[in-house]
Image 1 (tube, rainbow, N blue to C red):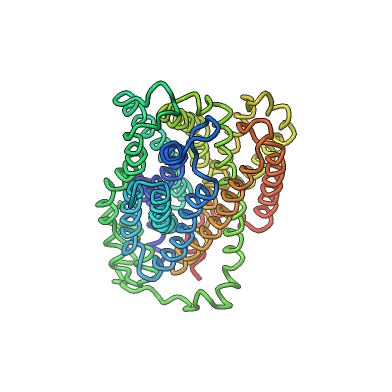
Image 2: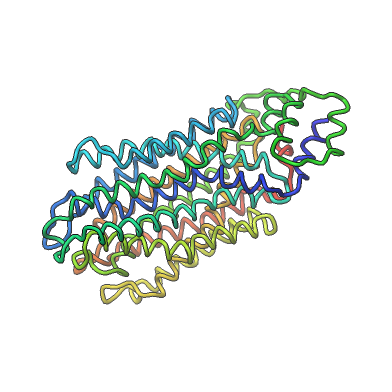
Length: 511
């Protein structure tokens, strides 16, 4: 009788609620990307406002403090993924789903505040609230993925879960547009003067970076009520709570389901699911049945995030080379140019990569596009190594190098950056699903910490001795390492990632 209900969910046509759920479930990821990319121009603004110029150049945030700002959010994400992944299976997806968004909204808004108006107070406050922002975002990862997968039909489940993840691309674009608008308005209303360094930026610049961070909460606030009104997923209600009748009622609140497929369940008055084999997460039986899949998902996510976050922070060198030197522009123009670069980059590479994944993930397969993504990323990175000396010369990074850099992000989003989010939402029993997704995601964010902080520190010593606007030879060795990691990702995916979850019911793993 249970099969009839699950079959009805699997065969339900793609309908309006699926698209609504993408927006609602994806808003935490939207805010995640907004925070990750907006912090780059914000850091430049804070550096010029709170740190004294040196050698005729604008002030910058010291490398140790920049690392702390990055690490605080990532550390919070690790904790959030583990904590809310666990709670999502114990208390239910719905009960904790609103909590994560509330943490995201409050923390993101409070990132714009600081206890005082000195550099130390600003950085400490920013790290404090970004840590809790990371906790909320981390909790949103497993809950958003699993809620979408448990409402989805089998035919388009991969595309629907990938659609949730693609909201990151729009978060990046929105952060760039907001930054550009605020900087342009502030420069028109109160220009910082002809001399871009002396006197210091006007007081309004301190308000500008705060507004940039706070405005990121608006889309999340607009979807808060809708998130709280979402029903519990029918699969959790039926398979974990064992209440078939309520699962059917809640499913029909938001989905149109074929009545013929439900006739067996309703005619027999089934209101309880047969209890599953009640082994615990920390049991030999779990690791025998699901341990290899969990390890495969976690390791793939770790490898991807080392590369993805390393190359994300490599953007600072791209900015320095492609844009005017900061000593030649005022504080608002510098932040505006950074944001404009991000907007072009998101439209040209990041968002198309997500859409390519959505279009192919249910046709080509998760494992296949993950291997393709890792492989092409490795090839592009290796080409960047081979052409490094020719491309990085005359104190500028040449245009073909920018194209290769964009290709890394396109194929990351087309491949492993999306599939590592999708696969853990499909491979585990309902009673362990958010826990396993949280563990895989937390492992990935450990890789993100290694990749981002490692590259930040290497950037301090890896600059060219004659010009600090381009990376020195040390960057070539970093690119070699990232190339090797991508090749390891190809081999690991081929060897350990399950061959197919396309059109496979989630209940295939319900043992």
